[in-house]
Length: 109
Image (cartoon, rainbow, N blue to C red):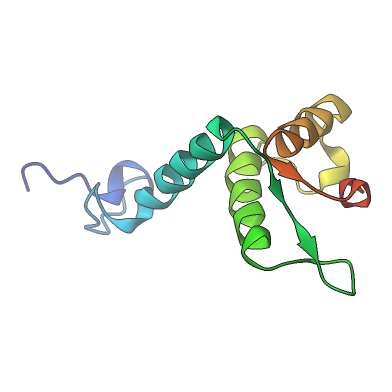
């Protein structure tokens, strides 16, 4: 099919007939745009916590979306455990979070 690129190019020859513009690739682009918007904001988002110390509310959703894109774009999938990620990478991620959000210091863990 002209203009349609299947997943076969990505998944080693198995043609799943999924067009290039499908949801399989759109999510990351949307998240990346959202993160870009957050980084250009003048004020940081204050994250509220529930009684258990877990982020809650709309701010928690924004934070979770940001963390998903940040982690997937900054940390290799070859790391099976966060404790194996380099300390300088963790520090860079923490600084990126603090650039956009006001979170409790204990959130760093």
